[in-house]
Length: 92
Image (cartoon, rainbow, N blue to C red; front, side):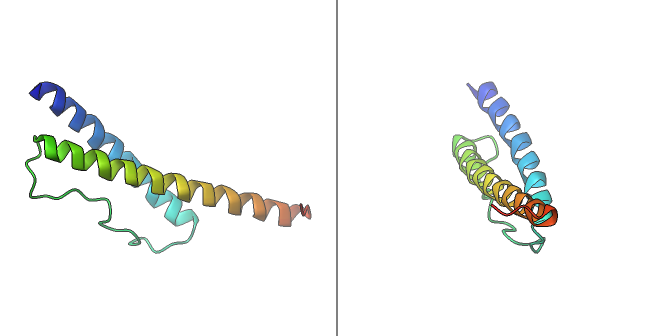
């Protein structure tokens, strides 16, 4: 049971870090301040990093981060499509 939880935590940490990098890229493309949402997706450092509570908190933070990344990516796509339409003279 402990090994399974440790593996889940490791996988979630990896996903969380990848999503953080994607969020930074999206913020850059959207020309948002690099510190926007800083710390919003952090997990309480007082939790034991091998506990079930930590796993649950990390899972929640990762889900919220993934949602924010998807919103930002959608916004980037919308702006990119709009910019292309204006540049080519196509207005829908």
